[in-house]
Image 1 (cartoon, helix red, strand yellow):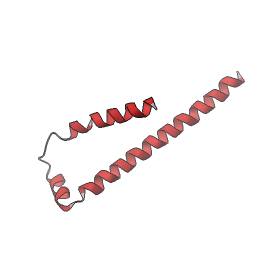
Image 2 (tube, rainbow, N blue to C red):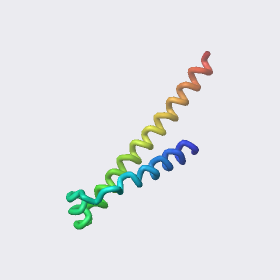
Image 3 (cartoon, rainbow, N blue to C red):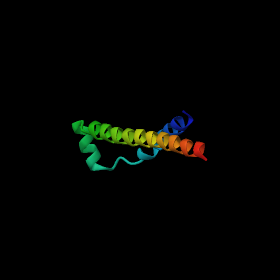
Image 4 (cartoon, rainbow, N blue to C red):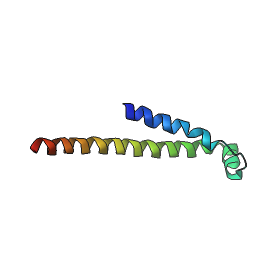
Length: 72
């Protein structure tokens, strides 16, 4: 649980770094059409999928390590 909270804190602290410049024309066009939300949702879904995959992989590796240490 501590790992998840730490990862979320790091993710939220880096959000401020993205809002430094408003000179991007493509972002203005996407924002005016309302399509920027689709882009943000896609990025969030991809990142959540990667996080879920990494945490499940970590659980499986811990289980394998525990089995191998029990044999020794």
